[in-house]
Image (cartoon, rainbow, N blue to C red):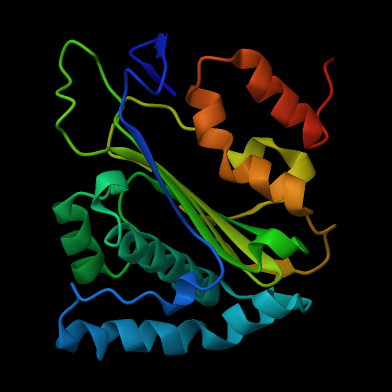
Length: 236
């Protein structure tokens, strides 16, 4: 379900595809990456994020520097777009964004990333991805690839939420506006932060977060409001 140019439509009318990798998505292999990248900057990125990522996964209380936050954001972005390559139907990252990441070593334009502290068993090792084709229905061709996505990555005591679009005029939901989540925005405009001092989110909370973009764009306002109330919001 999504909103196209202000009109609500069902999934039958608009391409919304999804990809869920459960128990061992970390074992997935992508063969689209050349050896020079795989053994070069990608390997360097894994090494640069190893310590901070291991601490977040273990739920340790640590202070993350600006440089570490930048590396972590790029690692999440890289993991997200690599996972997309395993399911082209739901991929929403255009080729020029891959080139941007290769050349600039940062998440592509239009990508927003948050980190969440969690103790959700369902999300110990899990990735859920939704791809949506968003735009003016009079100009859309449903053979076009998705242009908007939501990806949630769960690793141990950490979950990472990615919401991205290539549509410049499209607003996006922001986890910054949802205090009960205590989400840490790590892209864009990353800052250093302290991790492990907030209440961890349970299974239901992380499932709601993973579905927020679809709910926000969907044709059922009650479902979105009920989801927000489930996260701790109340009508004022």
